[in-house]
Length: 347
Ligand code: NAD
Ligand code: 89V
Image (cartoon, rainbow, N blue to C red; front, side, top):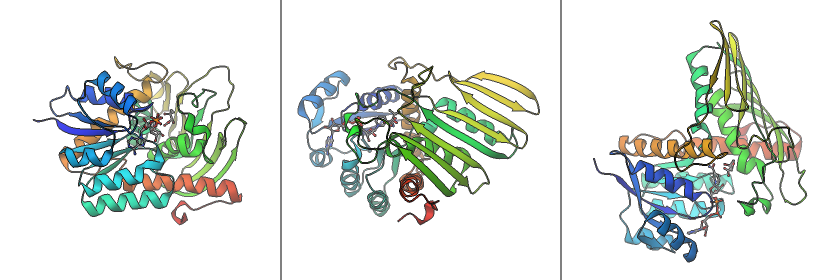
């Protein structure tokens, strides 16, 4: 079986993880390889191309699409460029995996999905948190029925980690934590508890050196009957720094499951109490504390390739991710108005 051949656009901070994971997948018979690289910063492009041994390079995405016959494109630029690049890929009938957040506005996100649908190409959003091993372990327990019918949950990310030093653009936007990190935890809540009927949010900016909010607390009422609390902070000074761990707590009619610090999972069910270590794998190119996120990049890319080969919709397709985007918009609207918002009514 031939490897699928892709191009990658955007050789910045996070792209190393994409490229390391693609290199792992190029060693699988049914995997994929990146054969062309693009970044508008020529020096950075040359550095990354040399590091990964990729010879075909472009400083202009349109030139890459014109010259290459790609099976897919991986877009690893920041959100303001996503719509134009996804529309370019659609115009060339090239399937896309595009980093989160999908776009600066939900209108842009809808246009991106429409462009790919009209072109008949797959579009997946690189929403990788639900591909983290510990989060998948919680979901497996919920779907197994071990805790009965879930009725309450909490998905929590609280950290004082200096994420701005690696990603300085995060300090500059009117929006910060809900758009950048909250999108992951809101997607995790959807993944675990299903679609959301109502959402209420409160936000704060604690760090004066950034423009947007760095703390958010959200109350979600899910269509399944679960009520969940989704909270995130980059201004938490705590005894133990947990970046980038997501902690999860779920209660059900027959038991409960908790994902605690240090990737410790505790299951209470009719069978009794059980504790498991659900630590992510430390891949040979990964480094702590990022290893869980890095493993999820490999998992999501593997899923994308499998769905392309099978011709089926990926789990976090563009259409699916619009539902998570609606939660982000609902959270900002609720925080601004002080009212509860129905995500289905987000304009
Ligand atoms: P970055 O600014 O470090 O890198 C972006 C790169 O894209 C830069 O090298 C820039 O020159 C290039 N670029 C921008 N527009 C371009 C264009 N039109 N054509 C060619 N090159 C272009 O950004 P980053 O921190 O690597 O983040 C990239 C994306 O990854 C963001 O959307 C961010 O939210 C996301 N991200 C996701 C995770 C995750 O866990 N899923 C983690 C970190 C970052
Ligand atoms: O950029 C991001 O997606 C961040 C993190 C660094 C935690 O992955 O949320």
